[in-house]
Length: 129
Image 1: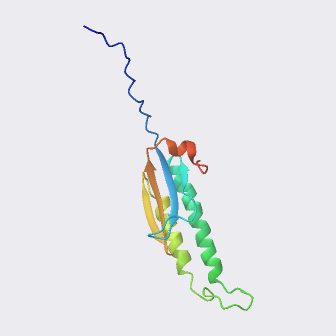
Image 2: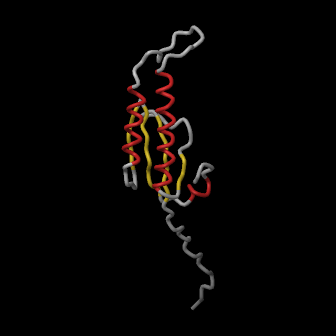
Image 3: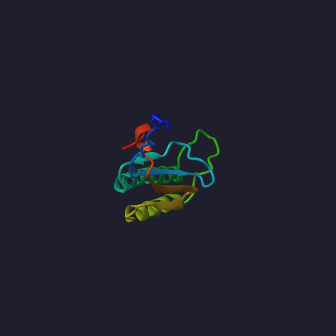
C-alpha cells in the first residue's frame, strides 16, 4: 500500500472580530458626500457626530439671518430658524442615546452611527479615531 506524503494546507486563519463604529450623514437615498468616520467606541462616534450637527445647526441659523449675497437673490434670506432648531433637537436626541447604533434626520439629511465587526475598516480607513 502506498503512503501519501503530500501535506494538506492548513485551514485559513479567521481574523478576530474588531468592534468599531461608523458615523456619518447623507441625503436619504444617496451615498454620503464625505467618507463616514470610523471610531473605536460608540461614545467617540456620538461625540464626533454631535459636533457635526452643531456645525450644521450654526450654519443654518447664520444663513437664516439677514445677510448680503452681493445683490443675488438668496433663497434662505428671511427664513425662520426652524432648520437650525430641528438640527439642534436631533443633536440632543443623539447625545442622550446609549448605542450601540443610532439614526435620526433633520434639515433634509440622515445622520447615523452603525456598529461594524470587520477588522479591515480600522486598518484601512484614514478618518479613524
